[in-house]
Length: 121
Image (cartoon, rainbow, N blue to C red):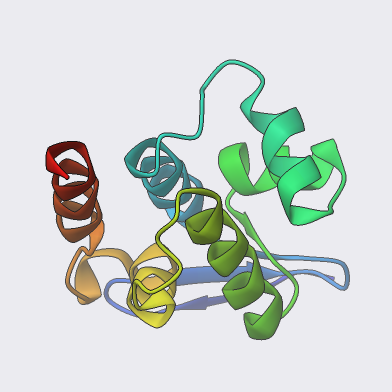
């Protein structure tokens, strides 16, 4: 059984096994680009960092499937930010944007600014 919930700007589809949020994969991949997770081998490397299967990480990147719980998503984003030395960046801002898109402010420019500051240091 599939349930679909739609608002003017958000579409969520759920089955017994997974939730999909339209546009999630596009935003999650943009986040991975912003933290410079290498595109080559991204699924394997990301999966090993986050302790999930390659198929799970790939579904986050390609199929709009979101992590099963909000705490799981928060933990995943924290791990990925820590990988780039950005653990102090407000993970909830990223989580809100990855889930809700343009309904909230895009935090990625701030992440890129932090990285530029690292280069200058």
